[in-house]
Amino acid sequence: MTVSVLVDWLEQRAPLRLQESYDNSGLLVGDPNAVITGVLCCLDVDEEVLLEAVVRGCNVVLSHHPIIFKGLKRLTGKTVSERTVAFAVRHDIALYAGHTNWDSIAGGVSFSLSRRLGLENTKVMMPRTGELLQLVVYVPNEFAPIVAEAAFTAGAGHLGNYDECHFASVGTGTFRPLEGAMPFVGTRGTREVAHEQRLEFVVPVALKNRVQEAVWRVHPYEEVAHSWISLDNSWSDLGYGAVGDLREPVRLGDFIAHVARQLGSDAVRYSRADLDRVVKRVSVCGGSGAEFIQAAAATGADVYVTGDAKYHGFQDTPGGIVLVDVGHGESELPFIEDWAEAIRLEFVTFAVLISETNNRPVRTYLNHG
Image: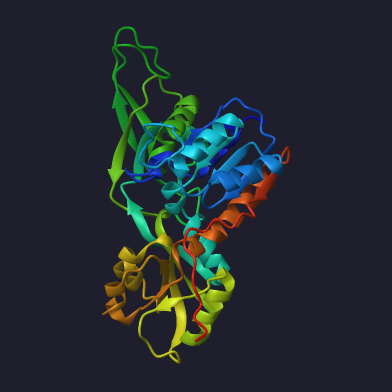
């Protein structure tokens, strides 16, 4: 199997258009047509990880953080990025990064963190807007079920935990075929009255072309009367962070200890609070999510777990929510395991491994007095 097949699969799940403008996700180094011998998944890629890839027979390395972020102007070996890219080129290793696009989807980075912490009934914390369209299409009564089925199969009509959603209203339409027309019904020059249905579907922006092609393929009319309408609705499948509930309420002190154990954190920082207070609802955001604490508080969460919180971010937290900082990388590592497992389940022609190299850039000194 080639690198391009894996890349296509990754980007169907987390399209590159979802990444932030400053980001650099995608295939960064390597030949898309190269045959995959093995895949190594990691949080950060560097020379040590690439050496591990060579030893373990992997010619593709998937990292969450891009090794090329702001662009490379030279390859002189003076920086980690330059040396890593040069190593990859010399050894024919493809480098792929899945960063903020995987932060932005249900089932992505924050959902892996929520699963590791034992949250249930999880949903996106900050749903995105501007990602949905409404398709309105007019179709003869007898063809309405066929058109609806084609739209559903192409991905239209998905709302949260429901699919095959649409609305149909019955009415009459008129049209007059002109010279050169080849009408499905009626004759040229004569106004026709048709018994039709107006079908309405919600469609993700990314699926617009696919849904339109599917509907047009089965629609009987030569000219399909339709409209695409941009919606300002938030979409629960896309957005940063996740929010869910613990199975049973616990003491804050016990929850913080649970977080540290599950994430392997050497130290966990948290805002001033009574450790005996009860925790039930929890918001999380993998990586650097301290700026989203207002959104976390708006979910009604008792605690917000993320990384990279600044000193003043722990003061006067909104709504009394407890801010828990587990570390940037620690909050993202559960995703690497889930990422690898998802690829293993989809592809069986090559090994998918998780890097064993400890290249965490931030270390903690434990002061035992």
